[in-house]
Length: 64
Image 1 (tube, one colour):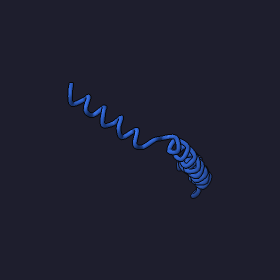
Image 2 (cartoon, helix red, strand yellow; image 1 turned 30 degrees about the horizontal axis):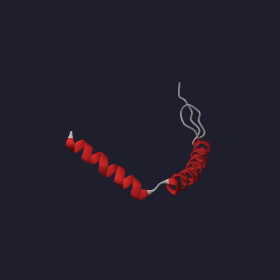
Image 3 (cartoon, helix red, strand yellow; image 1 turned 60 degrees about the vertical axis):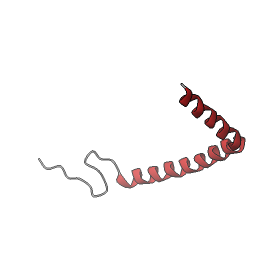
């Protein structure tokens, strides 16, 4: 018994174009959220202080 598949659908009946649209929407949503969180945390971070803490942690590692 041959299974006739529509050209726009997978074997299980999923609409390929619909999935592509949903994936695009999801990707756009993630990009805008990443920017929001990236700038939020960046503005609260003192880079010089982080470098000092990293250097101190590295020295403590080497001394053990």
